[in-house]
Image: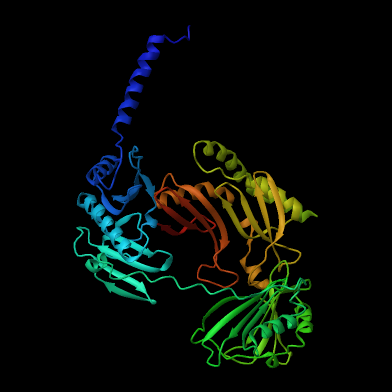
Length: 364
Length: 189
């Protein structure tokens, strides 16, 4: 019996296949080359690619990219469009990733309105000193609010200045709110187009406060006195501690800045002795903001207390010191010394009081 | 000496079914199903390393069929050790470092005797999980066994629980089983 295939039969098999592939390729819609100028064509391309009735969950529009998240029954799919490119099939999206219930019939999508509003948002950005937005989004928003067109503008050079623009799906009655001076302010869209609400400039960055290291390598578990003295000399006043924390590599000092204890500055010292102001922030209102000084805790005994701590937990014979914190105990009590120790299996805590007396030593 | 030999024999008898199913698992894996790790091989190697009894704190099988097993050190029951099994290679022990160390009593309560674990039930549990989630093509993203308390705190589900984590491109699901294969909880996103 011959196993040779008749060449005519081979062609008869391949030809319909080639034809089918060609037809399938011909049916894949192309995204328009200029989506913002051809919004109806963009919508038609999405409709053709989806192929069935669907509800719109989110539509994102820009000149370089558009995407559409739709719901069909219980399933969610995301479709993408790149200018002039064949539209790929939808990608499944996990139901749990879709947070909001807001939907719009796909037929109600007016991409031309989206294109118009994006141009308007860009005009507002230019008139008020914001970065031009790349896209506009039709959806329910981050907080699952009403369906609508949304653009978030950020200040040119100041990311903290924000202007949120919103229009309902039909593009009427736009609303705007500006975030400035740590609060939201309602703005009028028409006046924004006239440049009525310029973005606040970025606050000038404070020059870094830094003191170079002295070339000596430190082990803070043995000594922090020298670096606290350096910090005091830098500030020119007695240090008002909120918390002192350190391990072998780094010393961190939280200071209450003034008598009213409203601000906290955090200073860091690294292993080579470089001292720098890391951050300044308002004190937390109901936190313990009563300062203490070196005279209020067993400052001179620190190296001895720290070295003794690992031996105080019987169940952790091979423990070593992990880190140390000095802060007021309980509800704003006396400053205590807290030494955390560790071994391969876990952690332990040793606490000394303001006179260096052992309070507790136990496995964590 | 008789007791360890008896234990090893018992364990191998119990695991024989799992081994057979693991062999079947290879065939199913080629058909797109989950490739079960060779648990017989893993436990035989583990018993050879640490000796019986094996008391399991936690067992995790990941999507790549690698196994992470936490067991109680029977010479010092305060300690939990971690072992890894990766397609025929057993590595360990690595000390488990707890953020808050459970007491010995809590550990004794938490661990599960190896002989209580019916490994041959696993493929049936997976089939049941898919059915209960109505996700027949779901892939395994993880399978875990641990007592339903947490670090020694007694909870309402104070029993060993198998948790099957499954996923499809559209959904994630989780099904919990008792050691005997009873469905305890079904959760689908």
